Image (cartoon, rainbow over all chains, first blue to last red; front, side, top):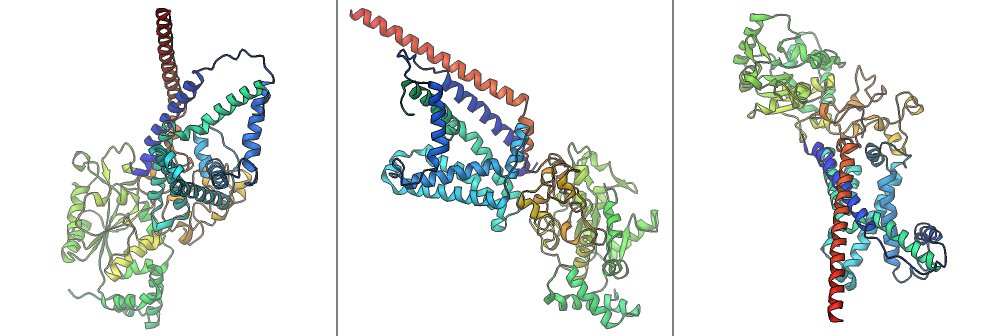
Length: 223
Length: 362
């Protein structure tokens, strides 16, 4: 068995199982913490609050012009963060090879985008990440807020993007299998790393949004 | 030992200087060399004596030999059989038995250190190599003898190069490629199941004519023929880029000649000249004939997770699906419930202690 087969085969298998186990643990551990009963009479609908917060958080806020109040204080973080997240989402879910990988896990597939689009989104995502990292390094506050975990997060997320990019463009004259193996290795590490890190916010974001939305909705204030 | 050169033997057969130069030009192109290398080829053909080739077959299906006889390049084939003499080839040889073996011995001794050894098929190593014997001698024995006297070795086919099909899991005969056993001779790999006939003839011609090893890649394959992937030279590549894929063998996409990536094509990881040289006189190649590339020029292509599964689908994901994923989820849930209960217990204990403290104070 060569490296490629190992990283696509047994190691991917282990990584996937670690990821599933870890994320189920994280999810239930948070939910099982429970929350205190609210004895005050409701002043609004909790469900409406939840809907509102999602509409606002996913459908409205990301598309605001950077000069809008609330985003203007940190336009760089806002724009670069948006570039990174949108790019990453498109690359992970809408590129054909990645969809095929999802299909092998989930058992169903969906339509994908042509590769030049994916290429563009991957580039956008990486540029966003580089801007965010530079910002973190330059800003004293950013440096202070960043621990070892955050630096590692950046590396663990950036490497699959970079290796995928090198893979697609056949850069550095590396044999395809070699760079494919490296790509799979970085993906395996990302999967293993996610449950132990704040990258798990791809899931916890939804817990937070739901709980805040419900709480604010009940209080009758804008979530 | 005064042997005729290729040029001399051509003149003897009534060919003109002009014919010779035409052939030399064709040869230069066929060997994947630049036009500037023509004088080198001419010089070699004028001055080098004809060199014998010994072709040994071990654990194989003779498919590579079959492919060789279907080489559509008449010049090269003629050259190989008329001017470069294949002095021993078990399948193509008219002679058989003792005489054939004696001839092989004679050529090996006469041309020691000069002949080119071509090996087809893998070599079984388990149980002292009893799984493949010729004339009562094991393949390992025969290979070691021939290799020790050869100038260079060309492993033709994936079996001789990387073990191939006999090497596939669980490899009952302990089959290996030539390079696992012979360490002290230059070895050129010409993998494929079978390799493209022209790639076989051209590689042999290169070594025999120029007396040198062509430029090789990391897996020991001539870069001229294994320098690019099937995917990179595939006529269906634009469909890949556009995201137009055949989803089954008889859907609209398949009929329109769209990309076969989703049907398991291994083109992106397979280095071969299939899409450019093609097969059967340049008529077609697997992808053009609406079948995904199997990746037969790559090591362990047989064990790569399935010919009809997408290259992007990790075999590890398939294995983790179902029961394993279920157990992982249950494991995660059990851990979470356990730790939540434990935390609750600690909380209750702390509350009770707090209450007791308050009571004491009161």
